[in-house]
Amino acid sequence: MKKILLWSLGGLLALGIATVVVLMFFLGNIVKAGVNSFGPQITGTNVVLSGATVSPLTGSGTLTGLTVANPPGWKKDNAFVLGKVHLSVAPFSILGDHIVINEILIDAPEFDYETKVVDSNIAQLMANIEKIAGSGSATATAKSGKPVKFEVKKFRLTNAKIAVGVGGVAAVTVPMPDISMDDLGTKEGGITPDQLVSTVMKKVSGSVITAGKDAVLKAGGAVGDAAKDAAKGVGDAAKGAVDGIKGLFGGDKK
Image (cartoon, rainbow, N blue to C red):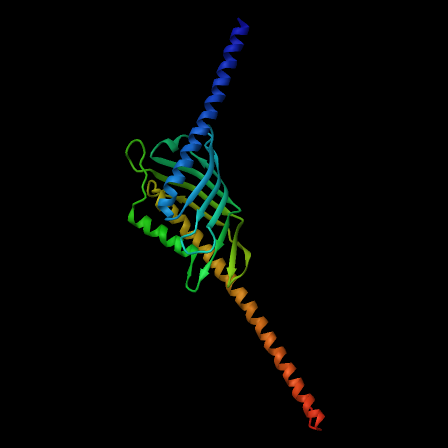
């Protein structure tokens, strides 16, 4: 009797573990498919999420290998790479039309900032997102037929780095200030995916562009100082040569 009871308990435990594993795979695939399907519709560029895992018990999960491509006409393939994104979702809300995300943490993302006179790749990407968000063309619907809406309690982006290329010179890497945003979509009772991306990217792109411009100005200042020093050196050398000639002919060297 005891053996039968132990076997039954063991079987239930194994079934429970298998169910959790299957649900993690199932929920992860839903997230991955959603990002890869709707990401390009929101940014107007190629968006790829390599993998995603979400625990059905705790709602914690990780997105890996998320890349967002540049608009056409820029040197680099990607505008930014997020690497790993940690998130905490209200369990099973992902299966409904109101997805509650308790926290999104993006740590050490990498941005590539390219600029052409008065335009940049990040500004152009942001213009794409705002245009699409304004049109309302990128929408997702749940099984209920209602539009899917998101609510994000906490958004954190930390330790970001920006590679800035200046006039063909090798790119320099500069840090970007951390970003913190709370209660996105809470007052509205949820916001659509394009609205969420637009809200977040306004903040992120603003920081990227500001940090990138500062780096460009500093680089330009360094080049300008170097040019001034070089010009001064040439001027001093020329003055020395003239004084030397005056000396040969008995002129005043002062």
